[in-house]
Image 1 (cartoon, rainbow over the protein chains, first blue to last red):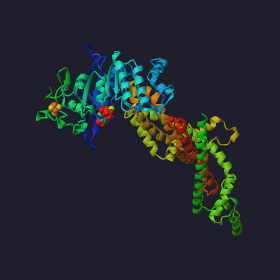
Image 2 (cartoon, chains in turn green, yellow):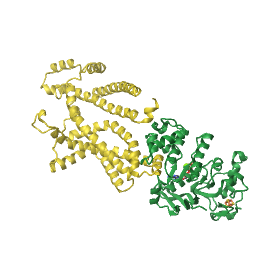
Image 3 (cartoon, protein in one colour):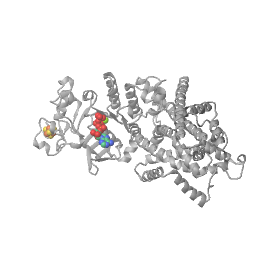
Image 4 (cartoon, rainbow over the protein chains, first blue to last red):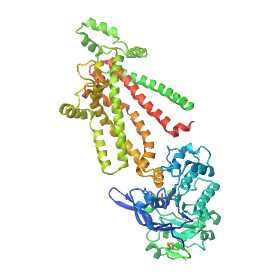
Length: 308
Length: 330
Ligand SMILES: Nc1ncnc2c1ncn2[C@@H]1O[C@H](COP(=O)(O)OP(=O)(O)OP(=O)(O)O)[C@@H](O)[C@H]1O
Ligand code: SF4
Ligand SMILES: [Mg+2]
């Protein structure tokens, strides 16, 4: 097996919140999350809105807001990922493809913005890339608000392509795109991975994810409940290990659109033990005792005491 | 390009119309207030001439039209104004317009220098506070800002006057030039020297607003998504300030600064009185205290125009500098 490029071990992120005037409360948004990323792969992180996906990206980059508390360990090519190392890697080895146009400076023209502060590459590279991405001539002279949704996505992706980063974290790169545009964008990430980089593809569209990703990590209430190969997701519930992944699969349009009743718990009031237990059809009192540990089953990882 | 200047002209015209309307309203209100007040301009005039008999007084009243209906008097005054005749100051016995012109030159020097000073100081300190948010620098500066914005101008002026002029003798006690020299002999340096302390007082009074505003704007920018992205691309906090911070906070700061002409004028009235500085501000309080109605009304109109122009510049700036507005219509 190849050396992992990035390892996240038992990551937790919490915020100090003031509940009432004096009572301080810790809001744990990510808990005991583990991930491993290998070169040449696209790892999809799938989870519903508010499950902590963007915070995971910020945590890896070392850009959590100041009032966030972080726990656990991260490694980059076997080296402990300290704030100093993160600072060194940002803009060189780590690249973010952000979620929306609000990540572009509203008062800076696209060309200058994409070139970045160090201009590590000649402007001609950018011009060639824009052409390749089908961005019309003159895009570099526009301001962000003048871009259409699809153009904005391609501009954001172009920053990652132009960087020499070997880890690309793409935070929901497809919403607002047509199906063709989404496929085009995802194939760009696929190409980047195939050329030796590694991509973390954050998405809530598991349907598209398992067409382009190698593995999928399913996020639920701030932790990964299952990591499995895309192959398993294509096969369906019989190959999947966690009741939540199975439910997600069943909820897909082509698989019957069976919705899972209930809501994901809010970070502030997670249930005791397995976070999925209130909605789990297989839940027993045993599940509510402790957070199920990660087990390796059939080449995947799962957090469920009854997983098979 | 031509469309920009065309649009600018259009905005300019629409502002012109609005300003004229506003001036009209202000003139009506000011005139009404003077009519309602116990001010007796005839008495004031007589004081200057010496004693007069009751008949002479009546003649004067007829001559000045004091007993006409207020509306008629207003119309007469307005007609004269529109012909460029602001009347004669009862106090100085000279045309109001001459006095305004001369005093305004002094005031504009004072207001402009303190405006510039407070803008530069306020903006710089605002950036510092925003960058070192909730740290020592920020906390101390923030306290200073709150204190400065809550003490009265005249008090600060008196303290500075006492300390730097009376005690340390670094600055002159007042006036815009040394006493006993004709104005043509006064050098630029002497003028600046006399200007310094009032200007410092005035800017100390007003920089905290711009500083606190800039601080908040910079904090918002530093927490924005686009700064997160810039940082993810390896920009340091200071590169971020240079590339994105300044770009996004200069315009709001500039706008605020232009929109603060009213406070600036208000502050200059007090500072000029404390420092016996012969500007519009000291003229307006002299006019008020001595029932010099023509001068009072003249300065009221003039200062309204001044404030309106500041606001107009603030609004025009937005259109010129903000690409959202600039390019939206082109
Ligand atoms: N600065 C913050 N302070 C407090 N809570 C925060 C902060 N940022 C995020 N959160 C909370 O953390 C949770 C996860 O946020 P995050 O943005 O990571 O979700 P997400 O999975 O990316 O959702 P989406 O799909 O909507 O982008 C949210 O419930 C949010 O309320
Ligand atoms: S641990 Fe229990 S509650 Fe949690 S997913 Fe497994 S069966 Fe369901
Ligand atoms: Mg998100």
